[in-house]
Image (cartoon, rainbow, N blue to C red; front, side):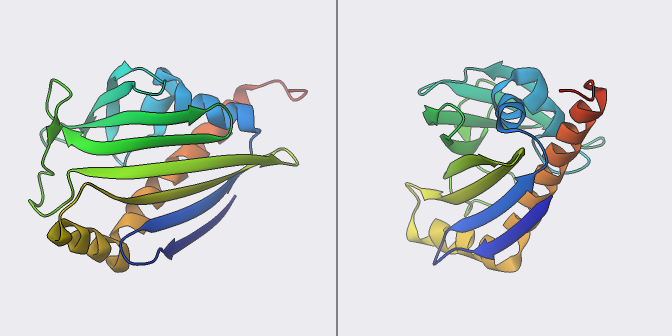
Length: 180
């Protein structure tokens, strides 16, 4: 596995990873409800996916739990899906009914973040590149997001999430026959 993180220009965030798994396996981890629930989110959190409509215009609605803290809901609004190539979605905190909600930690956090992830397979590994930036945000919200980029907060959050994806993919590989 290889990783690279960098701040994008202004108020965008980019990260790249290489997973030692074929593209089809990585794609299923992103597109299947049971698999997504096993790896999305920060380390130490559990995820319950109540809705996954993996299609352009569809939603993913989930509740994330950490210890005894109240659950935090989130949602993805899928904007574009090109199988085995790209996923574009708006992410946001959410209420129990999948409506957009403010982040529980700051009123300055953008309501929505547009994420795009692209995939490419090479020699049995999968290269993944993610780009994230505020969507429909005020100047104040954009500055807040830029602060998250420069502080390393987003690199830590996405990094932990993709570490969990790597662990999930490795666990799947251990259960497969060696010829697969």
